[in-house]
Length: 155
Image 1 (cartoon, rainbow, N blue to C red):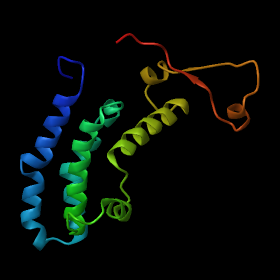
Image 2 (tube, rainbow, N blue to C red; image 1 turned 120 degrees about the vertical axis):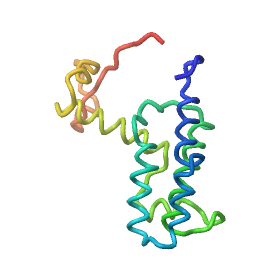
Image 3 (cartoon, one colour; image 1 turned 90 degrees about the horizontal axis):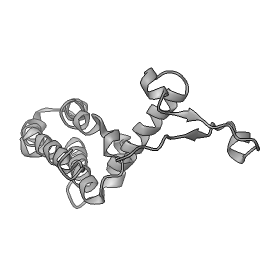
Image 4 (cartoon, helix red, strand yellow; image 1 turned 180 degrees about the vertical axis):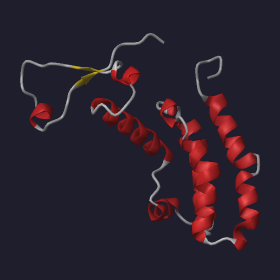
């Protein structure tokens, strides 16, 4: 986090390490000698793993910062599939079974929440969520959903 309480410094460092420190560039130089599966493994090891690391902390980031990360993901997807920049990215991401960055962040939060509710997460996470008991039956309760309460935190 920077002095303003944003994650822009982290996003900039992440983008530099993925693209500007030549990770994508280096992989693109040897791409001719690699098949798609090998390229995908390299991209997962050196690029998407960095995009996914602690990405739940990026929830609520301004669209400009998310866009920077999305451009890195788009470049990685194009490198794997050898597609040109003018081709639309959504079919490429769908072919690779990749979610866009914003949805990856939300998915990670949902996975952590699910594991916490079902006792598969560390206890310190379970202590952050409390179950709400409601006196009336709501539609969510009738569907088997568990109402949760997130404690208020000062910023």
